[in-house]
Length: 121
Image 1 (tube, rainbow, N blue to C red):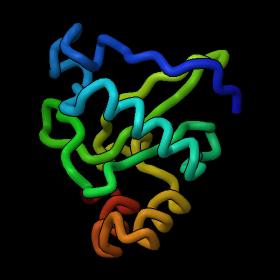
Image 2 (cartoon, rainbow, N blue to C red):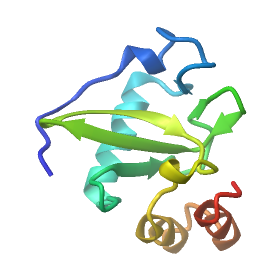
Image 3 (cartoon, rainbow, N blue to C red):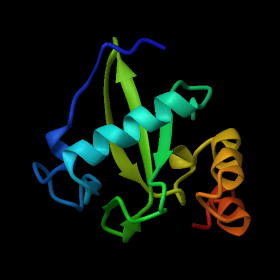
Image 4 (spheres, rainbow, N blue to C red):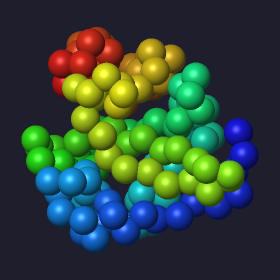
């Protein structure tokens, strides 16, 4: 994976309405910290997206459906950006390895991890 830079995407910070794009509730510094944590822990999926959650499993964003707890990051030619996602959407479910690591590190309970993996959280 190529990591040149991380860029805060204004589309997920109020430039577009919540009906079109999920929106961060955390600060830009916290967003960047979530990205760094995903890199360090190698919470990567086969499509080379990174995934992260807050150590206290707090709400990090929202979309038209509700509160969001998981962040997804992707890069293009080394420039990365991220956004909060709903694990109910198939394309926005973290990989099992990441979920299992979150459970192992006691960031989330096993029951929550199972619901995430099944798209029920």
